[in-house]
Length: 106
Image (cartoon, rainbow, N blue to C red):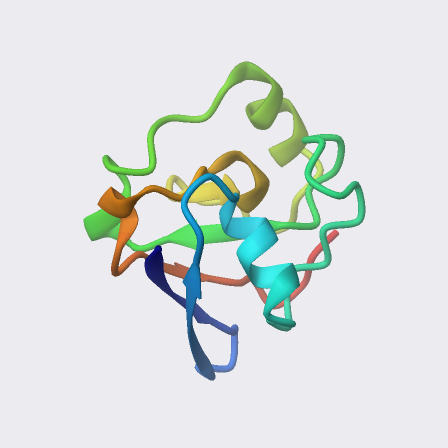
């Protein structure tokens, strides 16, 4: 399990434990974290699980796939550290991960 901190756009923090093998999005949905809509259920077919990965964690979360890049075209406020949380698999190496949600998912 990894402890992940989800920070809402208003600064509200939620720290939860997420089982290895789940995605960061699944961890948010299972723990009722606001700000991650996950409309497609994790199929990388929308951009409603968009998060900003804390700079210290960018390398450990990997790089965007071509499909993820394509889906991020539909997200608001995309930055260099933007990721779809459905595409980040949780491992013990991500213990302490910090992600922030945008003000609007869309």
